[in-house]
Image 1 (cartoon, rainbow, N blue to C red):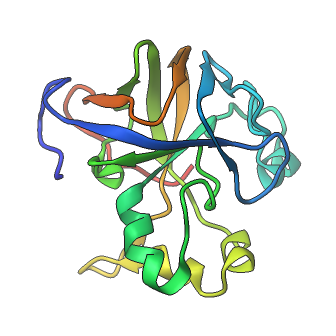
Image 2 (image 1 turned 180 degrees about the vertical axis):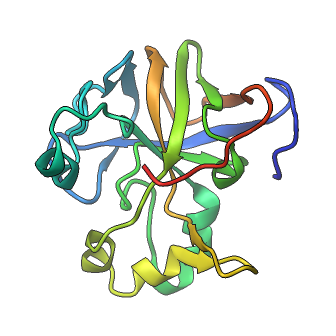
Length: 189
């Protein structure tokens, strides 16, 4: 689905899986639910915190704000990859796997209302790293593309921060609220 200037509620999708890992592993385990904590991320996940938890970013500057509290991937990417890589929800490190939302087309600062109370704010694109090829050889090239102008397209999902706490379950609706115009495109975070 292509994003226009839709109002909240007119554009929506659904959560098909939720995942977390309390260790810095590439893949995360599917769960019956996850709890999003305001300003922190996913309870029980290794990336929980106000400051950055991604190892390479901690090494560069451990005091950076954590703009990668919740990672989302659209299941349509998993469908695209299934014949060559057989990748399932959670295996690419995402916390929330969605269906019916073109996550990559969302502008920066879009709000996603998930389930009854959770609200997250989109901060940017996931920048896939070498761990992707360690998981499945060749997967890095499959999640990178080029547009007609030759610009790099990162397809490995989006990152977000938690604005309002709440439980998230498979089957929960995801409602989108776009930020005010002009919209800023997503960049890697």
